[in-house]
Length: 88
Image (cartoon, rainbow, N blue to C red; front, side):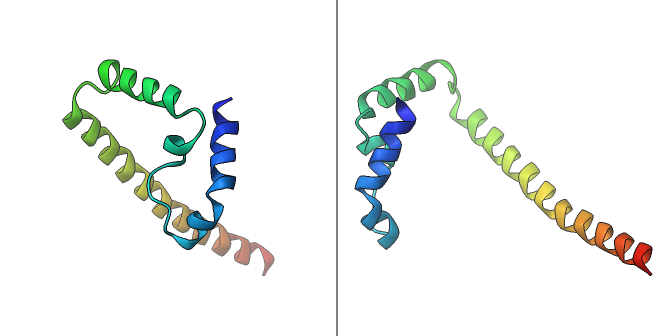
């Protein structure tokens, strides 16, 4: 199973991961690296055919994520202030 292969790669590379010296990816050093490579090649051929479009989609997703993260703090603050008024 792919997840098991990555977990095993994590265990085998734990010291270098924790030291910040691990280079590459767990997928590349896992026992399923060949299969992951085939999936990556197929994805590039059929799913991510335009690098610029993919870049824009990733950028847009990151913007939405950052905005939503910012809103969570506002919602928490509003909820906290409402709770404070209810307790008084």
